Image (cartoon, rainbow, N blue to C red; front, top):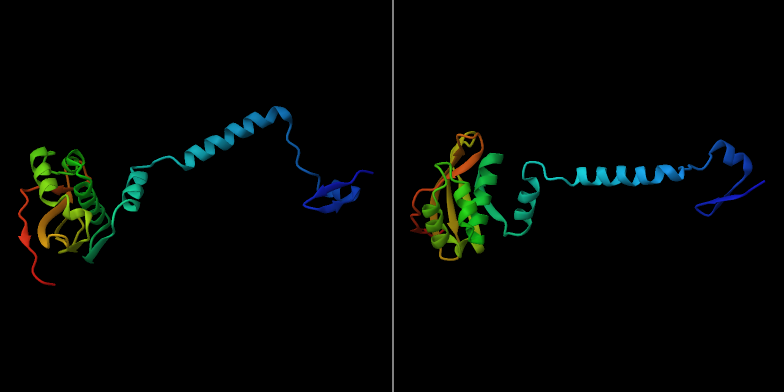
Length: 172
């Protein structure tokens, strides 16, 4: 009669027959390792930019929000503020629903890049199912900027990058 130790508890021969230990043939170990690695890679894969969004969210200051944004309008405004804070002209131009105007994106980054690194709040006006007007309030230089986010021709949310028009913020 053999005695097996399982988590520090002795098992009799009868227990072993009723609950035999799981045995994996040596030939099956490499397959099990590959299967586990594949499952891990699948679970960590980036689906639809979700990983990029989570990384952006974790590495930037929180955006203060008032009003009723939709999921798409909120995510787009967050990305606009993040691109401004990062000085990312190409990333901001890629969000432009009017064709990726790099000169307008450059103007926005020059005007608001530094301010976007400080506290920013966004007032979401109207209803946001397909377009929404938003007022950004930059705490650093105490300026505001109105913008419009909307669903573009490719059925994804973006921003209409008009020339930046900073106005001094009214006392809140």
